[in-house]
Amino acid sequence: MCRGSGLKVVYTPLNGAGNKLVRKILSRIGIENVVVVPEQEMPDGNFPTCPYPNPEIKEALAVGLALCEKEQADLLLATDPDSDRVGIAVKTKDGYRLMTGNETGIMLINYLLSTRKEKGTLPENPVAVKTIVTSKLVEKICEKYGCELKNVLTGFKYIGEQILLLEQKNQENRYVFGFEESYGYLAGTYVRDKDAVVGSMLICEMAAYYRQQGKSLDEVMTEIYEEYGYYLNRTDSYEFDGAAGMAKMADIMDKFRKEPPAEVAGYQVTEIADYLNSYKKDLATGEQTEINLPKSNVLSYSLEGGMGVIVRPSGTEPKVKVYTTSVGTSKENAAEIAENLAKYMSAFMK
Image 1 (cartoon, one colour):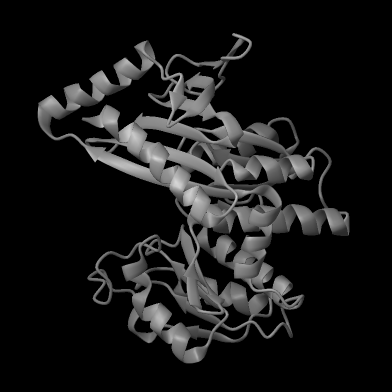
Image 2 (tube, rainbow, N blue to C red):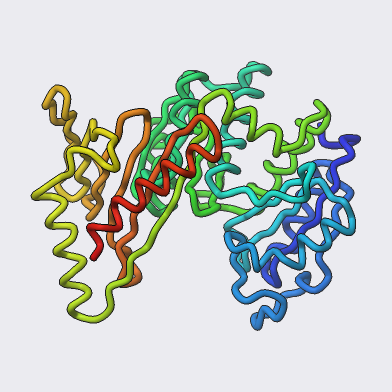
């Protein structure tokens, strides 16, 4: 499928470990036109060409994007230094568009489910896995293709664990794909953690498939939004330093538990999920169900229209993170709603 597609890729390992493995797997699947960013090809722990070697950050991709413009590549592929995460930028009519981790994962799961169903290789009762802070749009895609979607806590180990649980039932073949919004992807059951080598292979395979249909990944993402709605995910972090900051963070979470909002920026709360006390409550019916996940200090509020807000303290930094999901009729509309949701939540962080 990839051979003869004409796909042209600019690849950067960001001076990390992905160089040989990613190039080898791309060659194996027939992606021959790969141009490597020379300044970022060889391992270098000083990372001289980018301020922080993170494929989530546009500045880290600046050298690669410049080479894309020169080569007029279809796709920029960037793996992080330990090669477990991968970010992309895709060619558009106006230049290059950086895809979020959610958008890449959404395209991949849509591609895998649709093509495997078309070919008759989709397993019976397929399973996909995402973290609770990853895009709700995945739910719509899985529903369309009859795929069970498992939501797990933040951290790819929880996605890998779901493969083990299936394996213990001799059902590991049901696993199709797992991903998190922070650029981690995994298909297949051999690896049990996010893997940028597998991710890079799938991304290029997908890009080649759609290119042969005359579509860019930019157009594919737009088609998905037009079918399901424009979902926008936003993360805001609020920093609280020192002992007083830790106490403030605890107070914020405690207040949310004792006085849960009935609405957020004018959107009614339809369900509350408390991952520390392990329950979900449907506010319309009052029905309460158990959450069968490890306890975690996370509160989730589902809003009308498929939107939502999640609040949790960071596990590694003195920060409270607020994840918002907005659903709009256009990118602009979704961005406006996201801004209103974030502004509303920011008032609780003072």
